[in-house]
Each structure stands twice: as structure tokens, then as C-alpha cells.
Length: 208
Image (cartoon, rainbow, N blue to C red; front, side, top):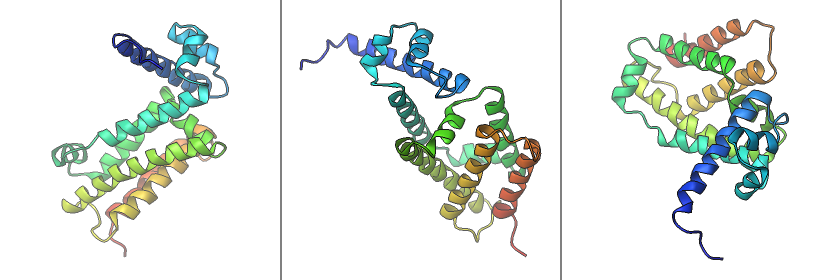
């Protein structure tokens, strides 16, 4: 099969990006099951045939979104200077600020994070793609922990890789309860504060 003319490739990439942005907005607003290919096409301002030219179905679009998300996480690498600016001299306050901002952002403007968490248990491929994202996020967290250990802000005795895995899973479990299952009791703000306290006790405080 002959390759499309070169000028059409940027247009094709732009259309694909527009379709994925439309799908992400639809999934975040209406959920995966509540969003149709027609909805995605209409929001992107194209015909349904254009969607199928780029993707076989909406599931393929979700998988592409997860892959793009993982690519962005892997591409972001903070320098020690940036980490020091973010963490400052009070890592407990930095951890609380990070989790609080993430939670408030998801509550005010939901993203596909909750959608993916909700689908991971019933779609093996979604779970597999998300596991790559989890590994990338845990790698970044591991580097943050190692930075904190070098600066004497976090416990030197904990294994950074194991700690990152445990903290990442604790955050995902709490997010599943608060964002997917929409837990109302106990109070979500209380759950968030207890999560901050649990993580800080583990990472920052020496065992008695």
C-alpha cells in the first residue's frame, strides 16, 4: 500500500490528537459507558467515519489515551533543583499539598484517571496498559524518595523502590474509593488527611 502524501501526515496527527482530546473529555464527563463514538465525533467536529479511520472503536481510543499518559509521565524527569523547590524544608506539607491539589482537581474537573481505575478490574488490556503507567509513576516517586533521603528529609532506612510501590498503591486504592465508588462515609476530607498522615509516618518518621 502506498504511503499517504507527506502534507497529509501532520493533518492526520492533528485529527488523531483532536479525537483523543474529545474522547478524554467525553469519558471524564460522561464515563466510558456513557460516551459513544458519535459523541466523540460530534465533539471533535468530524464525521463518525473519520473516527473509524483512526481508531477501530472507542476502547482503542481509551488505550491510546493511557499510552499517551504513560509517555508523558516517563518524559517528565525532575532535577534535584526542581525537587528541592517543590519539597522545600517541610516534606509533610509538600505531600499534603500534592495530594490535596490532585484530589480537588479531580473532584472539580474529572479526568480519565477515575475512568481507568474503574475499568481496570474488568478489562485486562486496560489493566495491562495502566500497569505501565503505575510503574512509571512509581519510578518517579522512587526518585523523589531517594532525593528526600539524600537531603535527610525522609527515613534513610526504608527501601525507596518498595516504599514507592506501597505509597503508589495506597493512593490508587484511596482514589478508587473516593473517585470511582464515590465514598461518602467516612468523610472524604478525613480519608485524605489520614492518607497524608499514613504516608508521612511511613516515609518521614523513624520507627519507635
